[in-house]
Length: 135
Image 1 (spheres, rainbow, N blue to C red):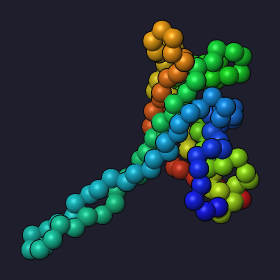
Image 2 (image 1 turned 45 degrees about the vertical axis):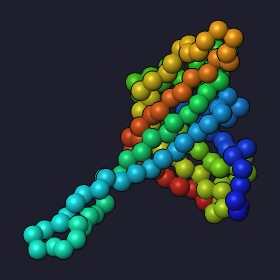
Image 3 (image 1 turned 30 degrees about the horizontal axis):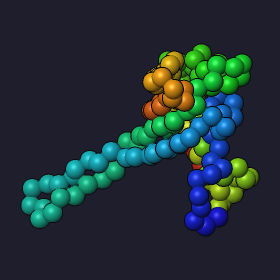
C-alpha cells in the first residue's frame, strides 16, 4: 500500500466492528523522554522511557442493539481491546493491524445542539502493549 486516503479504515471495539459509525480515528503511540545529561556534557542527552498512547475516536451515536451505545456503555471503567487497520483489506506488511487494550474512561450519552447530527468523541488511554499484525 502506498499513499492512501482514509476511506476504509476499520475499527473494532471488544470484537464488535463499529467502523460504519466512526468518522475519525487517531491511534497515537508515544514514549516518555528521560534526560540523561550529566556534569561535563556539552549537550543534552536523552533516552526513551515508558511507552504510552491513546485511541481517539469521533462517533455517530446509535442506540440500536449491537451498535455504538449498546457496545460501549457496558465497557465504561473496564479495559477492552481496540483494533485499528488502515484499510478493510487483509492484514499485511502494507496494511498492518494495531491492537491494544484501552481503558474505557468515557462514554458520552448525548452531545450536540438542536438540528445537529448526534455525535460524540472519546479518547481512551492504552493499558498494555501495542501489537502489530502483518498477516
